[in-house]
Length: 261
Image (cartoon, rainbow, N blue to C red; front, side, top):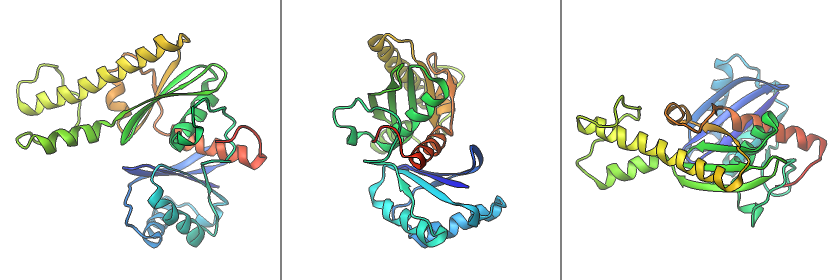
């Protein structure tokens, strides 16, 4: 079995694959101050609850955009699994050419998502990842990572509003029935959710105008479904895209072929 770990600023997502099948996955809050033992005990409990034998894990691959936690996760893998994990980074084979001014600047999660999406569709794509930041990544018809855009995530945008405007209450992020809200909560939900949908559709449309390839638009990340429900441009939501991409990269590195990050 293969354990895939995607470390984001807000959440860590774990996935267990048996061959190509994802048998289980979990999402936990990212805590930079947790120890390897705390994370290890948590993972043990998750495996036990899912009735998965930890000793059958033969490989681990990790993508991370949170440098302070990398050593902790590596320690947990060595202590609880007796495995040195493969980290997605410079020198790791991806099979995808990176057409970025400095390929080392691209977040590992963006490359991983691009690889999974292109493996599935084999055409030009825009991948929108709704995480702490919202990223838009364009993949060419030839399977090249071409770059993209980065915007503040919907959660941190909302938090900035609540912090700076003391009279505005924190709200549940759901899509309201109407754009014109009749109370403060509905007005906030309208402005945040519909405003974000408009931003996403606007950026995707501008990407399409620029590349002229009519890319398929895939969304992933924790809030992808919320925005996709009202979006005119998002065609599919795949919340497990990153885990699939990690599996593909692990398989490519077993065979030691392809482009490097």
